[in-house]
Amino acid sequence: MSDDVRPFEEPFARFRQVLAEAEATGMADPNAMTVASVDAAGQPSARVVLLKSFDERGFVFYTNLESRKGTEILAHPRVSLSFWWRELGKQVIVLGTAGQVPDAEADAYFATRPRTSQLGAWASQQSQPLPGGRGHLLAEVARLEAQHFLRPVPRPPHWSGFRVVPHWIELWVAGAFRLHDRTVYERVEGGWRMTQRYP
Image (cartoon, rainbow, N blue to C red; front, top):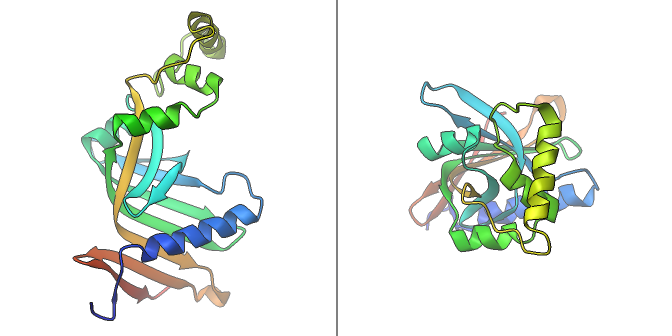
């Protein structure tokens, strides 16, 4: 293995360390990340979601597959993730390809969600117009609660997770006078090629 090629786990170990630093600050939602996708016309769109798990296989988040991001990612699975921790002066950018997690994995995570969140996954036609306003949504949640009274709420077929398998991971650390530190990991055969970049 050449000097600039690092083992597969290295960028994930560095990410784990930075995420732990963010969690230690007590900030709200240190696992928040921006997910950028693109539609058929090439129009990008971005939104903040919560990272739910990660390992050497990739970064996982959950969503309604019929939402704007869901339909865009299913049609065009190349995405970008961006994490920004102002308190640390650190950022991570991930470029990769998203694929659905296995049903068993989605079922297991869905079972850990608060019951009202589970009901909301059924009630919300995410990204679609909401006739009747918020009252209509709350009424639908109440109807579903009555329907599933004293019974577990199953995972909706249109709700699942995406695992973003990265081919590029960049760690950015703020420096004085804008002399920032940028480390880029690019996936290559046998591991990750690491390079330092100009700020």
